[in-house]
Length: 267
Length: 304
Image (tube, rainbow over the protein chains, first blue to last red):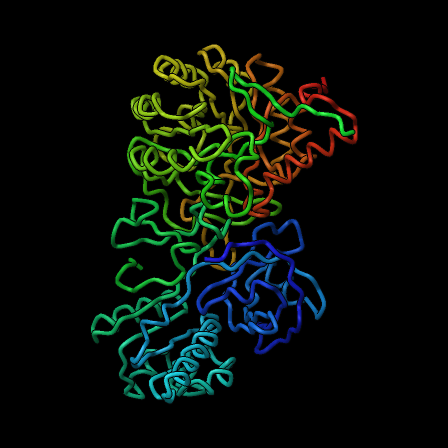
Protein backbone atom coordinates (compact mmCIF):
# COMPACT_ATOMS: atom_id res chain seq x y z
CA UNK A 1 0.00 0.00 0.00
CA UNK A 2 1.22 3.47 -0.86
CA UNK A 3 2.07 5.82 1.94
CA UNK A 4 -0.47 8.45 2.90
CA UNK A 5 0.62 12.02 2.43
CA UNK A 6 -0.49 15.55 3.06
CA UNK A 7 0.12 17.31 -0.24
CA UNK A 8 -0.58 20.53 -2.02
CA UNK A 9 -2.91 20.02 -4.96
CA UNK A 10 -3.93 22.53 -7.61
CA UNK A 11 -7.49 23.12 -8.72
CA UNK A 12 -7.78 22.31 -12.41
CA UNK A 13 -11.45 23.11 -12.87
CA UNK A 14 -14.63 23.54 -10.91
CA UNK A 15 -18.28 23.98 -11.79
CA UNK A 16 -21.63 23.73 -10.06
CA UNK A 17 -23.14 20.63 -11.62
CA UNK A 18 -26.50 20.71 -9.81
CA UNK A 19 -27.87 23.01 -7.17
CA UNK A 20 -25.38 23.01 -4.30
CA UNK A 21 -23.37 20.15 -5.88
CA UNK A 22 -19.88 20.98 -7.13
CA UNK A 23 -17.69 19.11 -9.57
CA UNK A 24 -13.97 19.79 -9.16
CA UNK A 25 -10.86 18.33 -10.80
CA UNK A 26 -7.61 18.75 -8.91
CA UNK A 27 -4.06 18.03 -9.97
CA UNK A 28 -2.05 15.87 -7.57
CA UNK A 29 0.58 13.16 -7.89
CA UNK A 30 -1.50 11.17 -5.38
CA UNK A 31 -3.95 10.47 -8.22
CA UNK A 32 -1.91 7.48 -9.36
CA UNK A 33 -2.59 5.65 -6.08
CA UNK A 34 -6.36 6.05 -6.03
CA UNK A 35 -8.89 3.22 -6.28
CA UNK A 36 -12.66 3.46 -6.57
CA UNK A 37 -14.30 3.89 -3.18
CA UNK A 38 -11.29 5.56 -1.56
CA UNK A 39 -11.33 9.16 -0.41
CA UNK A 40 -9.20 12.19 0.23
CA UNK A 41 -9.47 14.75 3.00
CA UNK A 42 -9.36 18.40 2.09
CA UNK A 43 -8.24 21.06 4.55
CA UNK A 44 -10.15 24.34 4.54
CA UNK A 45 -7.88 27.39 4.40
CA UNK A 46 -9.90 29.12 7.10
CA UNK A 47 -8.14 28.14 10.31
CA UNK A 48 -11.33 28.42 12.33
CA UNK A 49 -12.49 25.31 10.47
CA UNK A 50 -9.61 23.07 11.39
CA UNK A 51 -10.49 19.57 10.46
CA UNK A 52 -10.00 18.06 7.04
CA UNK A 53 -13.19 17.18 5.13
CA UNK A 54 -13.35 13.60 3.87
CA UNK A 55 -14.61 13.51 0.27
CA UNK A 56 -14.94 10.46 -1.93
CA UNK A 57 -12.99 10.17 -5.15
CA UNK A 58 -15.33 10.40 -8.12
CA UNK A 59 -12.92 9.82 -10.96
CA UNK A 60 -9.22 9.37 -11.55
CA UNK A 61 -7.12 10.48 -14.50
CA UNK A 62 -3.90 8.66 -13.80
CA UNK A 63 -2.01 9.96 -16.85
CA UNK A 64 -2.73 13.60 -16.17
CA UNK A 65 -2.44 13.05 -12.41
CA UNK A 66 -5.87 14.44 -11.70
CA UNK A 67 -8.61 13.53 -9.27
CA UNK A 68 -12.24 14.48 -9.60
CA UNK A 69 -14.41 15.09 -6.60
CA UNK A 70 -18.11 15.84 -6.63
CA UNK A 71 -19.45 17.12 -3.32
CA UNK A 72 -22.40 18.89 -1.79
CA UNK A 73 -22.13 22.08 0.23
CA UNK A 74 -22.82 20.78 3.72
CA UNK A 75 -21.25 23.47 5.89
CA UNK A 76 -18.52 26.08 6.13
CA UNK A 77 -15.71 23.87 4.83
CA UNK A 78 -17.42 22.69 1.67
CA UNK A 79 -18.79 26.21 1.12
CA UNK A 80 -15.20 27.45 1.09
CA UNK A 81 -14.20 24.67 -1.35
CA UNK A 82 -16.98 25.71 -3.71
CA UNK A 83 -15.33 29.13 -4.11
CA UNK A 84 -12.06 27.68 -5.42
CA UNK A 85 -11.04 28.47 -8.96
CA UNK A 86 -8.60 27.09 -11.46
CA UNK A 87 -5.02 27.50 -10.24
CA UNK A 88 -5.87 27.73 -6.53
CA UNK A 89 -3.74 25.49 -4.38
CA UNK A 90 -5.32 23.36 -1.68
CA UNK A 91 -4.05 21.00 1.00
CA UNK A 92 -5.18 17.43 0.78
CA UNK A 93 -4.50 14.25 2.71
CA UNK A 94 -4.62 10.98 0.84
CA UNK A 95 -5.19 8.51 -0.43
CA UNK A 96 -7.40 7.30 2.42
CA UNK A 97 -9.52 4.25 3.14
CA UNK A 98 -10.07 1.04 1.25
CA UNK A 99 -11.98 0.95 -2.00
CA UNK A 100 -14.53 -1.46 -3.43
CA UNK A 101 -13.21 -4.97 -4.11
CA UNK A 102 -13.50 -5.06 -7.90
CA UNK A 103 -12.58 -8.73 -8.00
CA UNK A 104 -15.87 -9.55 -6.25
CA UNK A 105 -17.67 -8.48 -9.44
CA UNK A 106 -15.58 -10.62 -11.78
CA UNK A 107 -17.95 -12.42 -14.15
CA UNK A 108 -20.98 -11.41 -12.05
CA UNK A 109 -24.06 -9.30 -12.57
CA UNK A 110 -23.35 -6.24 -10.49
CA UNK A 111 -25.51 -3.38 -9.21
CA UNK A 112 -23.79 -0.06 -8.61
CA UNK A 113 -26.15 1.79 -6.31
CA UNK A 114 -25.62 5.41 -5.41
CA UNK A 115 -27.91 7.69 -3.45
CA UNK A 116 -27.50 11.47 -3.55
CA UNK A 117 -23.98 12.52 -2.69
CA UNK A 118 -23.14 8.78 -2.52
CA UNK A 119 -23.26 8.66 -6.32
CA UNK A 120 -19.79 10.15 -7.10
CA UNK A 121 -17.67 7.08 -6.17
CA UNK A 122 -19.75 5.02 -8.62
CA UNK A 123 -18.14 6.81 -11.56
CA UNK A 124 -14.58 5.51 -11.15
CA UNK A 125 -15.98 2.15 -10.03
CA UNK A 126 -18.09 1.82 -13.19
CA UNK A 127 -15.20 2.99 -15.32
CA UNK A 128 -12.88 0.31 -13.95
CA UNK A 129 -15.49 -2.45 -14.16
CA UNK A 130 -16.13 -1.49 -17.77
CA UNK A 131 -12.39 -1.50 -18.48
CA UNK A 132 -12.15 -5.00 -17.04
CA UNK A 133 -15.01 -6.08 -19.32
CA UNK A 134 -13.27 -4.60 -22.33
CA UNK A 135 -10.06 -6.44 -21.50
CA UNK A 136 -11.93 -9.70 -21.11
CA UNK A 137 -13.76 -9.09 -24.39
CA UNK A 138 -17.16 -8.71 -22.72
CA UNK A 139 -19.82 -6.04 -23.11
CA UNK A 140 -21.13 -4.06 -20.13
CA UNK A 141 -24.51 -5.79 -19.89
CA UNK A 142 -23.56 -7.12 -16.46
CA UNK A 143 -23.28 -3.57 -15.03
CA UNK A 144 -26.52 -2.04 -13.77
CA UNK A 145 -26.20 1.44 -12.34
CA UNK A 146 -29.04 2.46 -10.06
CA UNK A 147 -29.11 6.07 -8.93
CA UNK A 148 -31.33 7.77 -6.39
CA UNK A 149 -31.91 11.53 -6.30
CA UNK A 150 -34.18 13.98 -4.55
CA UNK A 151 -35.06 15.64 -7.83
CA UNK A 152 -32.24 17.16 -9.83
CA UNK A 153 -29.92 14.69 -11.58
CA UNK A 154 -26.12 14.78 -11.74
CA UNK A 155 -23.40 12.40 -12.97
CA UNK A 156 -25.99 10.17 -14.67
CA UNK A 157 -24.63 11.11 -18.09
CA UNK A 158 -21.08 10.24 -17.05
CA UNK A 159 -22.29 6.84 -15.93
CA UNK A 160 -24.30 5.91 -19.04
CA UNK A 161 -21.18 4.98 -21.00
CA UNK A 162 -20.36 2.19 -18.54
CA UNK A 163 -23.64 0.35 -18.15
CA UNK A 164 -27.40 0.58 -18.10
CA UNK A 165 -28.52 3.44 -15.84
CA UNK A 166 -31.76 3.29 -13.81
CA UNK A 167 -32.98 6.36 -11.99
CA UNK A 168 -35.24 7.01 -9.05
CA UNK A 169 -36.29 10.44 -7.78
CA UNK A 170 -38.06 11.20 -4.53
CA UNK A 171 -40.46 13.54 -6.26
CA UNK A 172 -40.97 11.20 -9.23
CA UNK A 173 -39.85 13.85 -11.70
CA UNK A 174 -37.56 11.34 -13.43
CA UNK A 175 -37.45 7.54 -13.48
CA UNK A 176 -39.09 5.62 -10.68
CA UNK A 177 -40.79 7.61 -7.95
CA UNK A 178 -39.12 6.80 -4.65
CA UNK A 179 -35.73 5.33 -3.94
CA UNK A 180 -33.19 3.07 -5.58
CA UNK A 181 -35.12 0.12 -4.14
CA UNK A 182 -38.18 1.19 -6.14
CA UNK A 183 -36.02 1.39 -9.26
CA UNK A 184 -34.90 -2.21 -8.75
CA UNK A 185 -38.50 -3.36 -8.40
CA UNK A 186 -39.90 -1.30 -11.27
CA UNK A 187 -37.24 -2.60 -13.63
CA UNK A 188 -37.24 -6.17 -12.25
CA UNK A 189 -33.48 -6.09 -11.94
CA UNK A 190 -31.56 -9.20 -10.91
CA UNK A 191 -27.94 -9.39 -9.87
CA UNK A 192 -25.28 -11.12 -7.79
CA UNK A 193 -23.22 -8.37 -6.25
CA UNK A 194 -24.03 -4.84 -5.01
CA UNK A 195 -21.59 -1.97 -4.59
CA UNK A 196 -23.31 0.93 -2.85
CA UNK A 197 -22.85 4.33 -1.28
CA UNK A 198 -25.51 6.66 0.05
CA UNK A 199 -27.55 7.70 3.06
CA UNK A 200 -27.93 5.29 5.97
CA UNK A 201 -31.62 4.38 5.32
CA UNK A 202 -30.65 3.38 1.77
CA UNK A 203 -27.73 1.26 2.98
CA UNK A 204 -29.96 -0.46 5.53
CA UNK A 205 -32.50 -1.25 2.81
CA UNK A 206 -29.75 -2.63 0.58
CA UNK A 207 -28.37 -4.78 3.36
CA UNK A 208 -31.84 -6.26 3.92
CA UNK A 209 -32.52 -6.68 0.20
CA UNK A 210 -29.18 -8.43 -0.40
CA UNK A 211 -29.79 -10.86 2.44
CA UNK A 212 -33.30 -11.68 1.18
CA UNK A 213 -32.14 -12.16 -2.40
CA UNK A 214 -28.89 -14.01 -1.79
CA UNK A 215 -26.76 -11.16 -3.09
CA UNK A 216 -23.38 -10.04 -1.81
CA UNK A 217 -23.51 -6.36 -0.88
CA UNK A 218 -20.70 -3.93 -0.18
CA UNK A 219 -21.64 -0.70 1.58
CA UNK A 220 -19.58 2.46 1.74
CA UNK A 221 -20.25 4.14 5.07
CA UNK A 222 -19.87 7.73 6.17
CA UNK A 223 -19.12 9.01 9.66
CA UNK A 224 -17.84 12.21 11.27
CA UNK A 225 -14.05 12.06 11.20
CA UNK A 226 -11.19 13.97 12.73
CA UNK A 227 -7.82 12.48 11.79
CA UNK A 228 -8.79 10.34 8.78
CA UNK A 229 -5.87 7.98 9.41
CA UNK A 230 -7.15 5.68 12.15
CA UNK A 231 -5.69 7.34 15.24
CA UNK A 232 -8.51 9.30 16.86
CA UNK A 233 -11.24 6.60 16.88
CA UNK A 234 -13.86 9.22 16.05
CA UNK A 235 -15.41 7.49 13.03
CA UNK A 236 -16.21 4.00 14.18
CA UNK A 237 -19.03 1.73 13.06
CA UNK A 238 -20.46 -1.27 14.86
CA UNK A 239 -19.20 -4.58 13.52
CA UNK A 240 -20.67 -8.06 13.94
CA UNK A 241 -17.37 -9.64 14.90
CA UNK A 242 -14.76 -8.25 17.23
CA UNK A 243 -12.53 -6.39 14.80
CA UNK A 244 -8.79 -6.80 14.56
CA UNK A 245 -7.95 -3.31 15.76
CA UNK A 246 -10.35 -2.21 18.50
CA UNK A 247 -11.25 -5.65 19.90
CA UNK A 248 -14.64 -4.16 20.79
CA UNK A 249 -16.81 -4.43 17.62
CA UNK A 250 -15.85 -0.93 16.49
CA UNK A 251 -14.14 -0.74 13.13
CA UNK A 252 -12.71 2.57 11.97
CA UNK A 253 -14.54 3.87 8.92
CA UNK A 254 -11.46 5.81 7.76
CA UNK A 255 -8.94 2.97 7.76
CA UNK A 256 -10.86 -0.31 8.05
CA UNK A 257 -13.60 0.99 5.72
CA UNK A 258 -15.26 2.97 4.37
CA UNK A 259 -16.35 -0.05 2.29
CA UNK A 260 -17.66 -3.02 4.25
CA UNK A 261 -19.33 -6.30 3.40
CA UNK A 262 -22.94 -5.69 4.48
CA UNK A 263 -23.15 -8.62 6.88
CA UNK A 264 -20.01 -7.48 8.69
CA UNK A 265 -21.56 -4.24 9.93
CA UNK A 266 -24.37 -3.48 12.31
CA UNK A 267 -26.10 -0.46 10.81
CA UNK B 1 30.17 26.03 12.87
CA UNK B 2 26.71 25.59 14.26
CA UNK B 3 26.52 25.65 18.01
CA UNK B 4 25.36 22.53 19.77
CA UNK B 5 22.07 23.38 21.40
CA UNK B 6 20.52 21.29 24.14
CA UNK B 7 16.89 20.35 23.77
CA UNK B 8 16.96 17.49 26.27
CA UNK B 9 14.88 17.68 29.42
CA UNK B 10 14.51 15.38 32.40
CA UNK B 11 11.31 14.58 34.25
CA UNK B 12 11.41 12.39 37.36
CA UNK B 13 14.77 10.97 36.32
CA UNK B 14 13.60 10.09 32.80
CA UNK B 15 15.65 11.85 30.13
CA UNK B 16 13.83 13.00 26.99
CA UNK B 17 15.80 13.96 23.88
CA UNK B 18 13.50 16.92 23.40
CA UNK B 19 10.44 18.29 25.18
CA UNK B 20 7.88 17.35 22.51
CA UNK B 21 5.44 14.53 23.21
CA UNK B 22 2.11 13.40 21.83
CA UNK B 23 -1.07 14.08 23.78
CA UNK B 24 -2.87 10.92 24.79
CA UNK B 25 -5.71 9.90 22.50
CA UNK B 26 -4.56 11.92 19.52
CA UNK B 27 -1.78 9.66 18.32
CA UNK B 28 -2.92 6.07 19.03
CA UNK B 29 0.29 4.26 19.87
CA UNK B 30 2.09 5.91 16.99
CA UNK B 31 1.35 3.27 14.34
CA UNK B 32 -0.85 5.51 12.21
CA UNK B 33 1.37 8.60 12.38
CA UNK B 34 4.54 6.59 11.75
CA UNK B 35 3.56 6.96 8.10
CA UNK B 36 4.03 10.72 8.39
CA UNK B 37 6.68 11.42 11.01
CA UNK B 38 9.83 9.71 12.23
CA UNK B 39 8.75 8.46 15.64
CA UNK B 40 12.42 8.28 16.69
CA UNK B 41 12.54 12.06 16.67
CA UNK B 42 9.85 12.53 19.30
CA UNK B 43 10.64 13.23 22.94
CA UNK B 44 8.03 10.67 23.94
CA UNK B 45 4.97 8.91 22.67
CA UNK B 46 2.10 9.14 25.11
CA UNK B 47 -0.33 6.38 24.22
CA UNK B 48 -4.10 6.40 24.00
CA UNK B 49 -5.61 5.52 27.39
CA UNK B 50 -5.69 1.83 28.25
CA UNK B 51 -7.92 0.11 30.82
CA UNK B 52 -7.82 -3.33 32.43
CA UNK B 53 -10.43 -4.64 29.99
CA UNK B 54 -11.56 -3.53 26.49
CA UNK B 55 -13.84 -0.49 26.50
CA UNK B 56 -16.27 0.06 23.61
CA UNK B 57 -16.42 3.84 23.98
CA UNK B 58 -19.39 6.06 23.14
CA UNK B 59 -21.87 5.94 20.25
CA UNK B 60 -21.22 8.11 17.17
CA UNK B 61 -21.08 10.95 16.29
CA UNK B 62 -18.05 11.17 18.52
CA UNK B 63 -16.44 14.27 17.05
CA UNK B 64 -17.65 17.71 16.05
CA UNK B 65 -15.79 20.74 14.83
CA UNK B 66 -16.14 24.05 16.64
CA UNK B 67 -14.57 27.46 16.01
CA UNK B 68 -10.81 26.95 16.08
CA UNK B 69 -11.17 23.63 17.80
CA UNK B 70 -13.10 20.42 18.10
CA UNK B 71 -15.21 18.49 20.54
CA UNK B 72 -14.68 14.80 21.09
CA UNK B 73 -16.51 12.20 23.08
CA UNK B 74 -14.72 9.01 22.10
CA UNK B 75 -15.29 7.62 25.58
CA UNK B 76 -11.85 6.05 25.97
CA UNK B 77 -12.41 3.19 23.58
CA UNK B 78 -9.45 0.87 24.01
CA UNK B 79 -8.62 -2.80 23.41
CA UNK B 80 -7.65 -3.49 27.04
CA UNK B 81 -4.27 -4.09 28.62
CA UNK B 82 -3.70 -7.62 27.23
CA UNK B 83 -3.83 -6.58 23.59
CA UNK B 84 -2.07 -3.33 24.42
CA UNK B 85 0.96 -5.10 25.89
CA UNK B 86 1.18 -7.64 23.07
CA UNK B 87 0.57 -5.26 20.20
CA UNK B 88 1.19 -1.63 21.09
CA UNK B 89 4.13 -2.02 23.45
CA UNK B 90 5.78 -4.51 21.06
CA UNK B 91 5.38 -1.97 18.27
CA UNK B 92 6.84 0.83 20.37
CA UNK B 93 9.93 -1.22 21.26
CA UNK B 94 11.26 -0.64 17.75
CA UNK B 95 11.67 3.07 18.35
CA UNK B 96 14.22 5.16 20.12
CA UNK B 97 11.77 7.31 22.02
CA UNK B 98 10.35 7.28 25.51
CA UNK B 99 7.05 5.52 26.09
CA UNK B 100 4.46 6.98 28.43
CA UNK B 101 1.35 4.85 28.87
CA UNK B 102 -1.88 6.65 29.64
CA UNK B 103 -3.96 4.61 32.10
CA UNK B 104 -7.72 4.86 32.59
CA UNK B 105 -10.20 3.07 34.82
CA UNK B 106 -13.59 3.15 36.46
CA UNK B 107 -12.41 2.38 39.98
CA UNK B 108 -9.16 2.69 41.91
CA UNK B 109 -8.78 -1.09 41.53
CA UNK B 110 -9.05 -0.84 37.73
CA UNK B 111 -6.27 1.72 37.59
CA UNK B 112 -4.07 -0.23 39.97
CA UNK B 113 -4.55 -3.41 37.95
CA UNK B 114 -3.27 -1.72 34.78
CA UNK B 115 -0.40 -0.07 36.66
CA UNK B 116 0.64 -3.47 38.04
CA UNK B 117 0.39 -5.14 34.64
CA UNK B 118 2.73 -2.51 33.24
CA UNK B 119 5.30 -2.79 36.03
CA UNK B 120 7.55 -5.26 34.18
CA UNK B 121 7.01 -3.75 30.75
CA UNK B 122 9.20 -1.48 28.65
CA UNK B 123 7.39 1.65 29.77
CA UNK B 124 9.20 4.79 30.92
CA UNK B 125 6.39 6.59 32.69
CA UNK B 126 2.71 6.25 33.49
CA UNK B 127 0.20 9.00 32.89
CA UNK B 128 -2.94 8.58 34.95
CA UNK B 129 -6.07 9.85 33.24
CA UNK B 130 -8.33 11.17 35.95
CA UNK B 131 -9.70 13.88 33.72
CA UNK B 132 -11.57 12.42 30.75
CA UNK B 133 -14.90 14.25 30.65
CA UNK B 134 -16.54 11.66 28.38
CA UNK B 135 -17.03 8.60 30.54
CA UNK B 136 -19.73 8.36 33.15
CA UNK B 137 -18.01 6.38 35.86
CA UNK B 138 -14.55 6.81 37.27
CA UNK B 139 -12.06 8.88 35.36
CA UNK B 140 -13.14 12.45 35.98
CA UNK B 141 -14.74 11.63 39.32
CA UNK B 142 -11.18 11.27 40.59
CA UNK B 143 -10.01 14.43 38.93
CA UNK B 144 -12.45 17.05 40.13
CA UNK B 145 -12.09 16.81 43.88
CA UNK B 146 -8.76 17.35 45.55
CA UNK B 147 -9.29 14.64 48.18
CA UNK B 148 -10.30 12.03 45.57
CA UNK B 149 -7.29 12.96 43.46
CA UNK B 150 -5.04 12.67 46.49
CA UNK B 151 -6.43 9.24 47.31
CA UNK B 152 -6.07 7.70 43.85
CA UNK B 153 -2.61 9.18 43.38
CA UNK B 154 -1.51 7.69 46.70
CA UNK B 155 -2.91 4.24 45.82
CA UNK B 156 -1.26 4.24 42.40
CA UNK B 157 2.06 5.42 43.77
CA UNK B 158 2.09 2.46 46.19
CA UNK B 159 2.08 0.01 43.26
CA UNK B 160 3.70 1.85 40.39
CA UNK B 161 7.20 0.84 39.33
CA UNK B 162 7.52 3.74 36.90
CA UNK B 163 7.27 7.45 37.69
CA UNK B 164 3.67 8.66 37.75
CA UNK B 165 2.24 11.67 35.91
CA UNK B 166 -1.25 12.72 37.00
CA UNK B 167 -3.17 14.25 34.09
CA UNK B 168 -5.34 17.04 35.41
CA UNK B 169 -8.70 18.31 34.30
CA UNK B 170 -9.24 21.99 33.54
CA UNK B 171 -12.87 21.59 34.64
CA UNK B 172 -12.09 22.62 38.23
CA UNK B 173 -12.30 25.77 40.27
CA UNK B 174 -8.63 25.90 41.24
CA UNK B 175 -6.02 24.09 39.17
CA UNK B 176 -3.41 25.06 41.75
CA UNK B 177 -5.22 23.12 44.48
CA UNK B 178 -5.51 20.04 42.29
CA UNK B 179 -1.83 20.24 41.38
CA UNK B 180 -0.95 20.51 45.06
CA UNK B 181 -3.10 17.48 45.93
CA UNK B 182 -1.33 15.38 43.29
CA UNK B 183 2.08 16.55 44.48
CA UNK B 184 1.26 15.94 48.13
CA UNK B 185 0.15 12.38 47.33
CA UNK B 186 3.48 11.67 45.67
CA UNK B 187 2.90 12.28 41.97
CA UNK B 188 6.21 12.62 40.12
CA UNK B 189 4.80 15.04 37.58
CA UNK B 190 1.52 16.47 36.33
CA UNK B 191 0.22 17.01 32.84
CA UNK B 192 -2.40 19.52 31.83
CA UNK B 193 -4.76 20.39 30.45
CA UNK B 194 -7.15 17.63 29.44
CA UNK B 195 -10.09 18.84 27.34
CA UNK B 196 -12.60 21.43 28.50
CA UNK B 197 -16.17 20.16 28.69
CA UNK B 198 -18.30 21.67 25.94
CA UNK B 199 -21.44 21.23 23.92
CA UNK B 200 -22.59 21.88 20.37
CA UNK B 201 -26.13 21.88 19.04
CA UNK B 202 -27.01 21.27 15.41
CA UNK B 203 -29.70 23.91 14.99
CA UNK B 204 -30.91 22.48 11.67
CA UNK B 205 -31.55 19.03 13.10
CA UNK B 206 -32.40 20.30 16.62
CA UNK B 207 -30.01 17.73 18.04
CA UNK B 208 -26.75 17.63 19.92
CA UNK B 209 -23.80 17.39 17.57
CA UNK B 210 -22.38 14.57 19.69
CA UNK B 211 -24.26 11.41 20.67
CA UNK B 212 -22.84 11.91 24.16
CA UNK B 213 -24.33 15.46 24.27
CA UNK B 214 -21.18 16.88 25.84
CA UNK B 215 -17.60 16.44 24.74
CA UNK B 216 -14.11 17.67 25.41
CA UNK B 217 -12.98 20.81 23.63
CA UNK B 218 -9.45 20.82 22.25
CA UNK B 219 -7.42 22.63 19.63
CA UNK B 220 -6.12 26.21 19.32
CA UNK B 221 -9.37 27.55 20.83
CA UNK B 222 -8.28 26.35 24.29
CA UNK B 223 -4.62 27.37 24.19
CA UNK B 224 -4.86 30.56 26.29
CA UNK B 225 -6.75 28.67 29.00
CA UNK B 226 -4.11 25.94 28.96
CA UNK B 227 -1.21 28.39 29.15
CA UNK B 228 -2.85 30.16 32.10
CA UNK B 229 -3.43 26.88 33.94
CA UNK B 230 0.13 25.66 33.33
CA UNK B 231 1.36 28.96 34.73
CA UNK B 232 -0.85 28.66 37.82
CA UNK B 233 0.11 25.04 38.40
CA UNK B 234 3.79 25.85 37.98
CA UNK B 235 3.48 28.40 40.75
CA UNK B 236 1.63 25.97 42.99
CA UNK B 237 3.95 22.94 42.84
CA UNK B 238 7.61 21.99 42.46
CA UNK B 239 7.08 18.79 40.45
CA UNK B 240 7.57 19.07 36.67
CA UNK B 241 4.69 19.90 34.37
CA UNK B 242 3.88 18.62 30.90
CA UNK B 243 1.83 21.32 29.19
CA UNK B 244 -0.71 20.85 26.42
CA UNK B 245 -3.76 22.42 24.85
CA UNK B 246 -3.89 23.55 21.23
CA UNK B 247 -0.17 23.38 20.48
CA UNK B 248 0.36 23.57 16.72
CA UNK B 249 3.97 24.63 16.31
CA UNK B 250 7.22 25.62 17.96
CA UNK B 251 6.01 29.05 18.99
CA UNK B 252 3.05 27.57 20.84
CA UNK B 253 5.37 25.09 22.56
CA UNK B 254 7.74 27.89 23.65
CA UNK B 255 4.79 29.71 25.22
CA UNK B 256 4.00 26.68 27.40
CA UNK B 257 7.66 26.26 28.36
CA UNK B 258 7.84 29.91 29.37
CA UNK B 259 4.68 29.47 31.44
CA UNK B 260 6.50 26.78 33.39
CA UNK B 261 6.12 23.46 31.53
CA UNK B 262 9.19 21.22 31.29
CA UNK B 263 7.74 19.42 28.28
CA UNK B 264 4.76 19.81 25.97
CA UNK B 265 2.36 17.61 24.06
CA UNK B 266 0.87 18.08 20.62
CA UNK B 267 -2.73 16.89 20.57
CA UNK B 268 -5.64 17.77 18.33
CA UNK B 269 -3.34 19.52 15.88
CA UNK B 270 -2.02 16.12 14.79
CA UNK B 271 -5.41 15.74 13.07
CA UNK B 272 -4.96 19.02 11.27
CA UNK B 273 -1.33 18.52 10.38
CA UNK B 274 0.00 14.97 10.64
CA UNK B 275 3.54 16.40 10.69
CA UNK B 276 2.77 18.72 13.64
CA UNK B 277 4.97 16.89 16.17
CA UNK B 278 8.12 16.99 14.04
CA UNK B 279 7.43 20.56 12.96
CA UNK B 280 7.03 21.61 16.59
CA UNK B 281 10.46 20.18 17.41
CA UNK B 282 11.91 21.99 14.42
CA UNK B 283 10.16 25.21 15.42
CA UNK B 284 11.68 25.07 18.90
CA UNK B 285 15.13 24.58 17.35
CA UNK B 286 14.60 27.59 15.13
CA UNK B 287 13.52 29.70 18.09
CA UNK B 288 16.64 28.67 20.02
CA UNK B 289 18.72 29.57 16.99
CA UNK B 290 17.01 32.95 16.61
CA UNK B 291 17.53 33.95 20.24
CA UNK B 292 20.81 32.11 20.66
CA UNK B 293 19.52 29.88 23.44
CA UNK B 294 22.01 27.13 24.24
CA UNK B 295 19.85 25.12 26.55
CA UNK B 296 16.08 24.83 26.32
CA UNK B 297 15.94 24.67 30.12
CA UNK B 298 16.91 28.35 30.23
CA UNK B 299 13.44 29.37 29.15
CA UNK B 300 11.35 27.04 31.30
CA UNK B 301 9.23 29.24 33.53
CA UNK B 302 11.19 32.32 32.45
CA UNK B 303 8.18 34.60 32.67
CA UNK B 304 7.42 35.18 36.29
